Length: 141
Image (tube, rainbow, N blue to C red; front, top):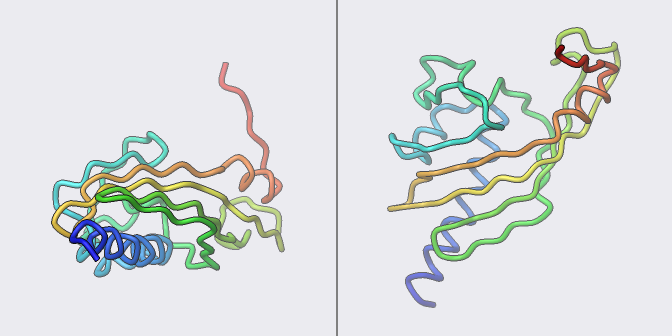
């Protein structure tokens, strides 16, 4: 196995841990996995990332801690792509219809350097989450 193959295998394992830690809000695990100068795009919003946990709301909205499933996982050199889904309970979403659940699907692309995530992009189907919770989306005028 070449050094590049070993790096790819390590990165694939680390992205699994990252995805789980992200959904659980595990800041200690995030601090071990993410470079201090992380470049990110969490659905293009403007939040900051504080992996040390000083601002828990900054880390991917909040921890839903629910049923992460990784459907596809691909790595090549320093890049990893993950297609995933997780279930969110209506009790975790303000104003959701009681008793609802929704599966959120998404894709994450990450780049690693020296064993740490240095860039990450997340895209999630939040519209299906809102509809699944019985929430509506109004157009801004």
